[in-house]
Length: 321
Length: 222
Ligand SMILES: Nc1ncnc2c1ncn2[C@@H]1O[C@H](COP(=O)(O)OP(=O)(O)OP(=O)(O)O)[C@@H](O)[C@H]1O
Ligand SMILES: [Mg+2]
Image 1 (cartoon, rainbow over the protein chains, first blue to last red):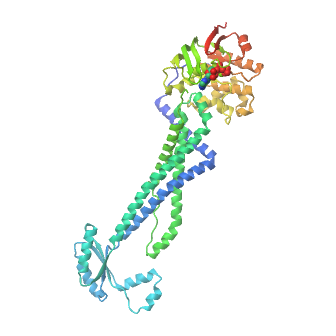
Image 2 (tube, rainbow over the protein chains, first blue to last red):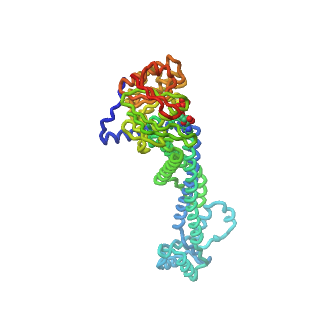
Image 3 (cartoon, chains in turn brown, purple):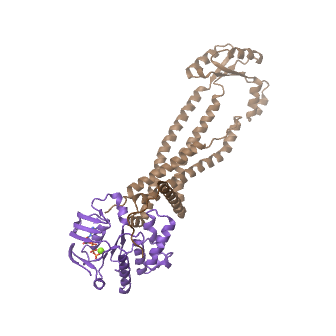
């Protein structure tokens, strides 16, 4: 026959206690995951909804990121294209370029000769027949002007443009900055969109996880009640629900990552075709390591907070009623 | 071990369920709690297990004053009070083993030790061979014994039973009460609410009689 416990028990050492505590948490976390996989369909649905919700802002972020990279590569192209008068020859253009290089505002000057311009034009494709019709090369010489970073502000560029136009060889000058600035504004807009959409869909994820955990708590009411009867602490009862929330978050985050990555793989084909039209390669950037970590930790945090809210609202702990 | 001092319990919807209850039980004492339906037997047991708090009065169990016990200490109090219910309160989708293990699992006891103690408890109630069964596959008496094993597996110093034999035939009831006697021999304090007056009389233990929420009789056993 078993005797009732004497109240005095050997207290385990601190390290031992910590080990036990850690073991319990690992076991608890794994047991919770196992329980989620016991009901794959509802779990899968919740995870999918979270994944899709998070994939939207993540995809928008990736879009903005790639557009910025693209804009960066355009920044490297001429800020001002100076089109020379048609009667200016290549021989006359060289000293002009030499002269321009001495201007303090200008970092670099490239001459795009008529022939090379024509060749580029041919390479674009689609214009061969039209070009065949022409006897002479219709293209003027273009001088690509790269200003110094210190002179790249819109107002300064405008001054530079006017100065260039006063050259007698100049026909007209095109500034690439206006639309670049617009592009920048669009990027900023998209970035704001990422934040807004992220916040909104993040709230959605909170609600989804919260509701899922709420239903789970209702389903397990009897079990919870009995656990309370036999002396489970409220921390013990809450733990599996919080773990479930964290798992939902992690699985949802992984799903979002997968969706974005798949979408990028599918898009890379058409983007490459588009890029080849511009004679460049454009490898799409996906979610990098730090971005992936942000998505995953964010989704885990959302899952945890969502489940915590549900647990706070629907589990009132061991309370005599 | 269990001490009531001028305890009142009032339900807002119904009025007083317990009125001015005072008594004391010593360590290792076994007693019955009888009285007509609605007299307040279950209410009294629920107060001891802190499933409810008294409206007035002091209850001291195992050295703890329940009136001042903070909420976060309640689970630890319940670990010291094994409770057995007429409707068993077993988890229908868990095995006998898992049901009995629950009070140990919630304390964070290791796997091996849980297994050892659960089997010891199941052995005491004669259900060692049924540990893999689910509750519905068991008879009423067997289910009640699972409930008893769960109540004693943590070796609590106090054991409460609320009509543990309500649905059982006299033969099975007697067996269950004999089981309780064995716990009393090892020093457990037992309080058993029951309607089975014939059995109560045959066992000669202390008996509390409740009537309309008052303690109307406290007969010493011998
Ligand atoms: N949660 C509650 N809310 C309101 N009234 C209650 C509650 N619990 C019990 N009561 C009332 O308190 C009185 C005592 O109930 P209790 O369950 O303690 O009686 P009992 O002696 O166990 O009866 P029985 O033998 O039928 O189980 C009853 O009149 C009951 O209606
Ligand atoms: Mg009752």
